[in-house]
Image 1 (tube, rainbow, N blue to C red):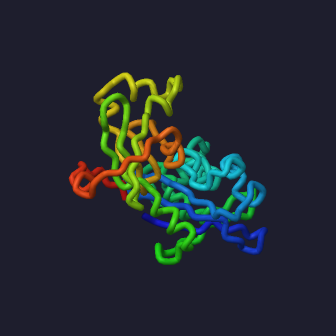
Image 2: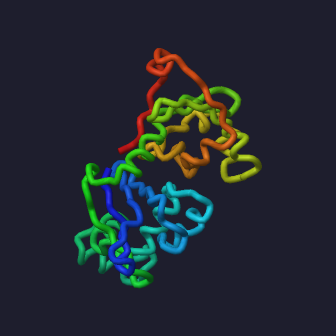
Image 3: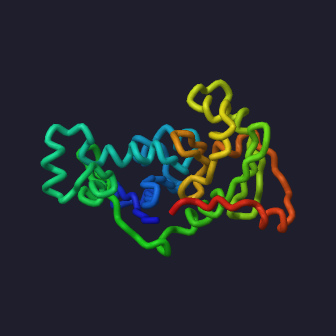
Amino acid sequence: MIVFEIRDKAQQDLLLGYLFYYERRKRFFSEILGGVDEWSAPFIFSGHIKKGIYSIDSIWSMKFVRQRIIPPDRQNLGSILRENGLKEYDEWRFLQLSKGRCAQDELYLRKISNQDILPEIKKRLEKKVLDVMVLGQHKVLVFLKNGESRIVNVQKLCGDNHVFGRVLREEDVFRNVRVSPGGNGMSDLSAFFFPIHFCFNGTENTFLSSSLRNNAPLCTPSR
């Protein structure tokens, strides 16, 4: 996991939050500080902040990243790749080149070590998903890093959203639900993703013995 601070030069280099990059799965996630309001936050996250959501999933974090790098449909992309020694389009490599700066605002990224993350965010990270166990009837048992466990009714959360139809229709697909990178939610091998705050809607708290918890099949987060 690689960590960047998200800072705003226009606000005297104010720290707004963190961008996390998980190399194995090539996924980005973001955590915005609790004191940041919708006007101070990165514009693309303002809708989340307005709803009180400060943990930003991989889809919106990737949109944030793509705002700050050369777009994949750039006309002279081939020559840009060659000039930078790249064989293919890679958001991570382009983000390193741009340092997260773009013409739309004065935000920038600064790489830090895990030890430099503020306690507020470290505490939030402890509430991420540690493991999931697929149960019957479209339910998943979710184990959190802080020791809590919850039963998530995926069908209830999906409702009539056709995007998740295949996950519910095909048992083999549903059985592939795993912990997303960094424990930020649940995902399968395709586009299916539930962010951590969504997993808590309509869930049942469960109290499991440590022996059951320790013997659960572990699906550790991707790094």
